[in-house]
Image (cartoon, rainbow over all chains, first blue to last red):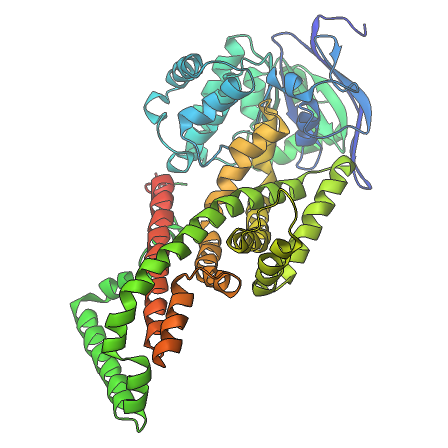
Length: 252
Length: 288
C-alpha cells in the first residue's frame, strides 16, 4: 500500500516526545480523499500535537507522514512547499494583528505562491464574501469578534487552496453563541469535498460531520469507527468513560 | 470578547496627566491650576531672594549674553541635527541586522550569533565618549590609505557603533516578545523563515519597541555633543563653550541646552501620539 497515491494522508508509526514526555506513541492513520475525520479525546491526549506534526510544525521522533503518496517527513523535503497544500487553523486564531483582514488573507498567496496582488485580493474577497465577512476586509483582527476572527483564519488557510485542512479545536476559544457560525463554515467545507482532520470537543458536531471518528487516549488511537459506532456503541472502556464524562458535562 | 473590554482604560494612554484632570471635572482643573501657580511662584521667589541670586543671574541668566550667543549656537545646532539624522539611519539598520543575526536558530548560525553577541557586549560596555575618542583621534592618526581621515566622520561612526549595540538589544527584546504562535501561523501558511521574520515578526516587534527606541533616539540626539571632543568644527555645544570662554559667562551653555530641549521634548510628545494612534486604529471598538 505504501506509495499508493490514492490516500490523501497516510500516517505510519508516528512517535513524538517533548523531552522525556512521550505525547504520541505510534499513530497509524489513513485518510482518503474527501474524507472528514474527527479526533476526539481528553485534553493532553495528543490531538493537537498530531495535527502540528502533520503540518511539520513539530519534528517527529519516529514514523512517517505521506501526502498523496509523497513522504513529506523525508529528509530534504521543502517544508514550505508541503505546507502550501496542508492548511491548519489554530484554536487561538493566530491572525496577524498588525495587518488588515484582507492582508492577513493575501499575505501567503502573494509571498509564498508569488500570486499577483490583484489576483490574491480577488480570491480573498471572494472567500470573505462566501463566509459572510465581505464588510470586514479592511478591519484589523482585534476589532472582530472571536467567531469572525476564526472565520478569517479559516479563509486565510483556504486562500492557499490547500488539499487538506487541519482544524485544531477551532471553536474551543469561542463564546458559545459564536460557535455555530464557525461550525457552519466547516460544514460547508465538508460538503464541498474538502479533506479534513478535525480535533474537536464538539461531539454533536463530530457526529454530524465526520465520516470517521478516532478516539485518542494517552498518545494512541484507542478506537476508531463511524460516528454511530463510536458514539452509540463504543467498545473500549476508556472511550465509554470519556463519552460518559462528556455527557455529564452536558456537551453532547 | 463580548461585553466590556477590560483593556480599554489602559489603552487610553495618550496624555494620561491631562486625562486624569478631565475625569476630576472643572473643580479639579481649577485646583490643579492654582496649586501649580502657587508652587512655582514659591520656587521662583525662593530662588531670586537667595543670597547669591545676583551672581547666579549674572553668570547663568544674562540676557545680553543670551542675545549675543543664541543665534550662533542655534545655527551650529544644525550640525547636531545632521549628525543625529545620519547616525540614526545607520543605527536603525545595523541594529536590526545585529538583532536578526542573534535570533537565527541552529548550530550553523552559531558564528553569526556569537559575532552579534560580542559586538553588543563590547560596544554597550564601553563609555560612548571613550569610543568617540578612540575612533575620532585614533583612526585618522593612522593615516590609512583609502580610509576617510575626517575626525567628524569617525566620531559619527563611533556614535553609530555605540548606539547600534543598545538599539540591537531593544529590537531583540521586541522580536522575542512576539508570540511563537505568530511564527507558527506564518510558517503553516508556507511562508519561509525569513518571510515570517520580515512580514510577521519584525513589523510587530518594531511597533512594540517604539517607546524604548525613542529613549535611544533622545540619548543619541544629546550625545551628538560628544563629537565636539574630537572635532574642531563647532556644533552647538562647542560653540557655546567658545562663547563661555570668551565672555566668562555660562549663559551660552543654557542657550545650547535650550536647543536640545526644543528638539527632544516635542519628539517625545510626537511619538506618544504616534503610538496612541496606532493602538487606537487596531483596537478601538474591540469590544464588539
